[in-house]
Image 1 (spheres, rainbow, N blue to C red):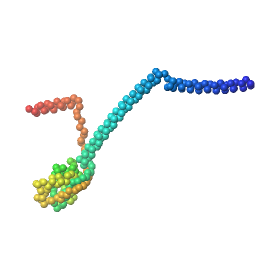
Image 2 (cartoon, rainbow, N blue to C red):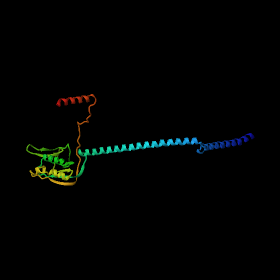
Image 3 (cartoon, one colour):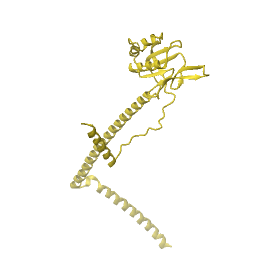
Image 4 (spheres, rainbow, N blue to C red):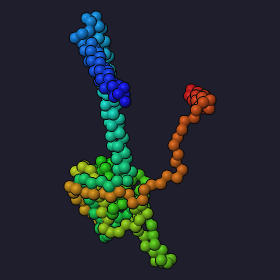
Length: 257
């Protein structure tokens, strides 16, 4: 029992001594690795290495800055292109009558007692287009390149029938009001030129009322146009295209002297 009691203190003392030696060794290692204890050649090599890394990082920053600038300019160009496409789409919607429009313009009112036929409406709209009208509507019917102005009849019996004018296949009721957007002065001058449409109507005692308006609203077309037979054109490729070119060239040679 005495021997066991003698070994325990010795073991504890040796353990503490080992811990102290380990801590001392770590402290000396940290001190030895400090810059103040490094050799001059080692410090110079470290400075050069850090300088090279700094230069590489600076070049990388410049390169990334150039890439960022290029990307920003590319995005700006894409945005400009998208804005241009969006503007053209809006113009096409207006030209095709798919969007309502508003602005200053002119109103022409035709009462029921005036002897007007559908060709007179055609002449009035054509004169308005020629005078610079940007959009036209007749009794709320938008006039586009696909619009029709015509005449129809209701037949009740062989001796009883009613003839009426139509716009876009819809019956026109009196009073007939034509709205046109554009420069009101130019539109009115286009209609009232000497020997023009208004002078011709006056020969039949028809005097439509022309009024300049600061703000008009013209609705969109009620039934959008549907294309059934139109397909995207794709040019012929390969040998067939060359044969077509040769045929066209030979045809021109045979026609031209």
